[in-house]
Figure 1 (cartoon, rainbow over the protein chains, first blue to last red):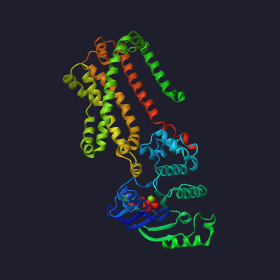
Figure 2: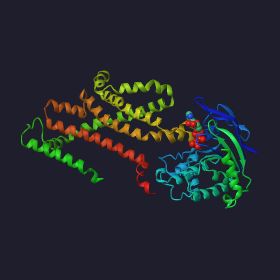
Figure 3: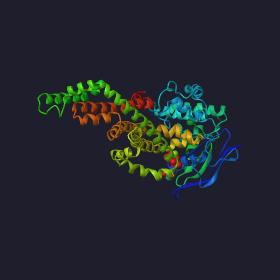
Figure 4: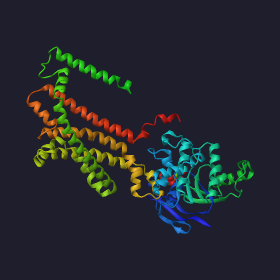
Length: 244
Length: 254
Ligand SMILES: Nc1ncnc2c1ncn2[C@@H]1O[C@H](COP(=O)(O)OP(=O)(O)OP(=O)(O)O)[C@@H](O)[C@H]1O
Ligand SMILES: [Mg+2]
């Protein structure tokens, strides 16, 4: 069942083509990764899918319905953490609830049990400037989670984390995805990360961005702990490197 | 806090001592430059009168400030929401800011008479600009990506204003307010000078006619003290409204 479908999307900025005829899809519960060089138009594609940008051509469909140009249907974690500097971490995390009209007290009550899961205990009353880069990123992820749509776009969500925290966030995220039937499209520069957690990987070439290839990771989920040391893993990696 | 102020306090004290010694030696006749002690005496003996007149001046300053700030706020919001209005009025705002309020004040007296109206109008005119311009620049400084984030969460325009634009403009709003607070007292005094029935400006013209230099100095100090107090009030409100600004340095070690 197709959850999200991007059909023949093209976009240029001031005459420079950035995306050329992109068609990708995301099935329910799937985690799909977009891998590509810097400046290849990945963020631009996310801005189009989330409805922040209008494509020159093409459509975005959610559950078969056209949502091109309509923000508000998809959880989107932008590349910058964009925590509001003048709000405490709990009020930043509660922002999606506040926007929906939930009262402040109630919204704080709803986010507070999530803090330990995101490794953010004790930061509720702090301001973003008081947190480390990795903590800020997790706070931004928590905020995205609180928006609770069933499709999530994550633009380099774990890039500021160390390897150990990253791998525990991966486990946690895959678990959450399963529990709430979340479908995720995410961007990364990290090939290992892409192979480790994705069901499928789209390879995007640069200027203009075009889908170069699609790689299906057949390894069943949850993945074994030593998957990244296996021959299959290296085989996937080699394939990606030759295609990029 | 106290330590930081030591140099400035010392400088002021030194200045007062020099002033006092210049007067005590009779270098400058006391009817032209009264000594600090004489000024203190004048301040104490005139205190009831000064208080009475300050009340009038402060009342005008507050009414004018509140109206000026509110008008400035609405003007800024309107100009920010409708780009046409921004394009039409922003240059005009900047141009009108170059007209000194002292030049307009006599006109206002001719139009509105000697009551409170011309004073309040002058204060509105002079406080509205710094607030409007500060807010407009603040609104424009709001992070485009943060606005995108809120849009992606389906936020309405009013919510984007409340959660992003307004808080982003707070620092500029407070700089504008600080200027406006100082202008409001000066504006009130100037327009009282030009005609009125009470207030520190009227008191000033009276003591000037009597060549009472000591009282003149007393009222000058009082006016600057009032301006400083108002600005301190704005600074206090600023700290209260932006607690996150005080945490920046402490945050480094967490
Ligand atoms: N609003 C815009 N106006 C003009 N050009 C833009 C705009 N947004 C992006 N671009 C250009 O489009 C190209 C793709 O940018 P994009 O941010 O989508 O790349 P990316 O794949 O996300 O890169 P990275 O991996 O570094 O984040 C870049 O050359 C960028 O300069
Ligand atoms: Mg990007």
